[in-house]
Image (tube, rainbow, N blue to C red; front, side):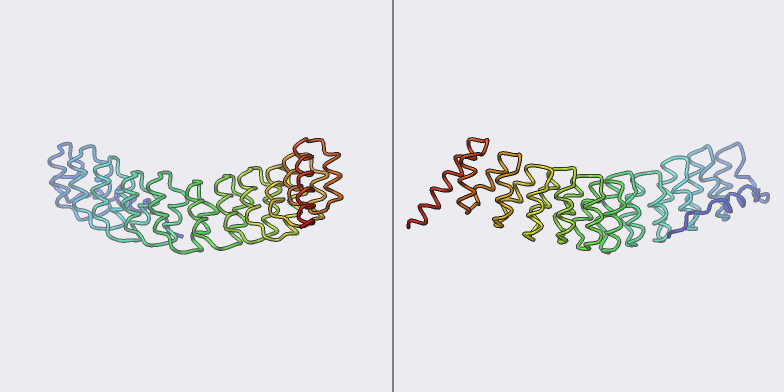
Length: 310
């Protein structure tokens, strides 16, 4: 885990080191004299204090120009009171570890973005992809991720649905995909995970239980186990889901049960269109409450008789 910048020791040095030997002093009332004082300073902590706290823009910028310590520059890039000073400090940063801290903590979107563009550390990029508030920043960080384990963390923990979905689309880890498919709060993210699942037991659970119709349909489309499809055809909470399962079935026992017992006309119709049991078709043609289902059963009987005659 990347350590946070520890500014307290620097502040203590800045407050206690009163630069007694400098003439003019950096606390002089005249900004031009403070600039001359700064130009004689080498103490990085004092320079940082001036860069952050001085009331005059020119004094603050003069102080930044004297800074060389990467950690101190990062402190100014993150904590400077105005954008110009923060940007000036950032421009002098070259250390990747320090840039990582600025990318995580900087208050300026463009500074965080510029820092991200220089980073390669997958752990830091993942933190930014997971938690940064700005879309450009977190998207740029995400595009630089290549480690599949790290992408799994983004898929599970990302604050933004678009990033979680993008991470899912790069994953093959079934353990992570199962967790996303069942637990993610966003319908589109769950659907993206379902489309990459292979576990038939999980797919049937999603097909029967998920709250979103499109997610349930995506799960049915991925089902290949006929026994599992039969359970969905009989137990699915939504008529569209049951019908989609029926359309993939050939099991006559399940089709008979659906054709006779399902409460939805369209689901019964889909089952009747696949029936071969003529006794059941006669029963449906006579007894079904829906005119179209009865007519379809009669047509199905005629077709079967015609094929038999040939």
